[in-house]
Picture 1 (cartoon, rainbow, N blue to C red):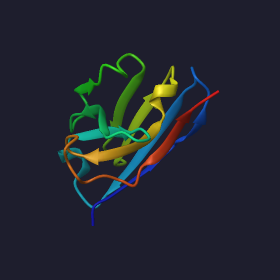
Picture 2: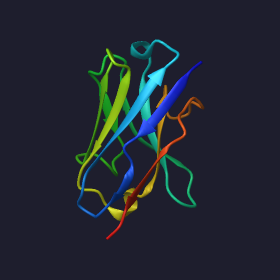
Picture 3: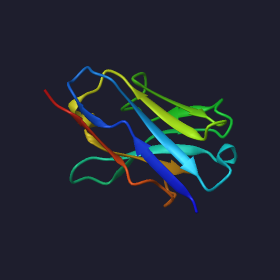
Picture 4: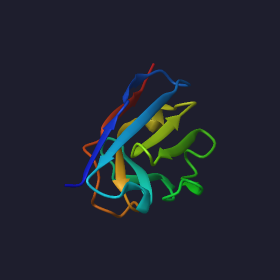
Length: 116
């Protein structure tokens, strides 16, 4: 069955960095656009970034542009999100999504907390 497992979250101080990973299985990974979304406490899901199946095209929310980088390793069926210059507003549960942000195929999430 389709499975997406995120990892790499944690507690980091403002200005710090984290790298999130998502291990995919149960489908042909390279055939799918992949997306990161996040949900801050008390708020709805927010789109963060999307990458094409081949990895050549990426898009970012304005709130993370220039700080976050999405990438993928199709050979190993992995999706990544490099997060630099983290802000307290980046605190959220981050989810890996198969397809675009409206898809309901996503992992269990990984918590990112940015706090001094």
